[in-house]
Length: 303
Image (cartoon, rainbow, N blue to C red; front, side, top):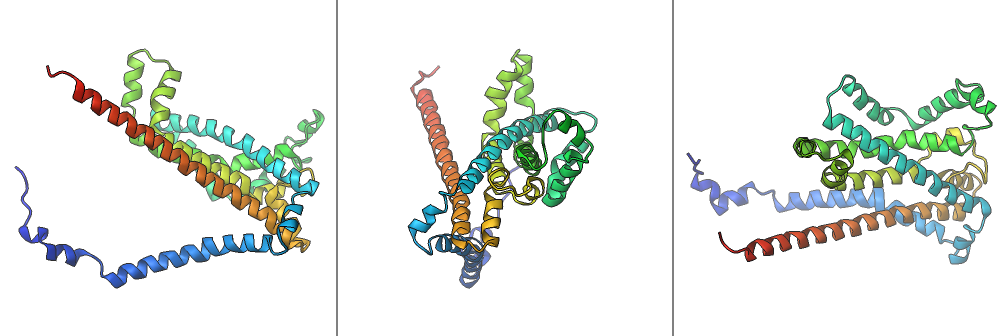
């Protein structure tokens, strides 16, 4: 039996009474905009203002330094290694958590969240204790001629550790919402694991996957704490862009420091623009597919 709604609840007067007062809406919107301006827009404007304080010539001259160019290269290299590794791990961990039941599942979820609860500086110190010269495995790696701490491998390990929850934590809720029915039906029809992953699982979680990759990439390029501990701050060898910014700022080279910081800001903005453009393109394709299916059904002859 259908439920009836009291006529008073549908009256315009009742709808107006349920709305917030105009002054309350303006106060909430103004507070939110003020908060965003103080924490996002003003610092961003300050970075570019300080970077261009002495003009465009001094700004571009900051990037002619070999140490600055190497810091940019190393930052991109570390992000280029860490993000694909975390992508593979995030997919594997999410698949295991959402599509299977096994002993230790809760432990795996806890380990995924571990970097969120551990300070990046502490994680860097743990890597030093494990892979340092006097660490558990330091002598072994030294015997084979591989230096981990105060070298690029240590920076990659630190970055992978602090960023690996981002992809998994975005994909797990999406896979849980999608359920297991489609994968189980594909298995019964004889589909391989690659066909299931490519045709069912990935399309269902593509937005969460994209968002997780973007978060992971942003954190990888901007990571400071763990990388600072394991890098050794060696100019031209182990300094990423955030570490190079710190060195320049401590040397009172403010224009060069803010110029390098503005580069990180530009990379973040470009990432957001790419994300928006990709989302628009995919949504456009989905609308075209829906329109085509609707037109096809309308053109089908009636049975």
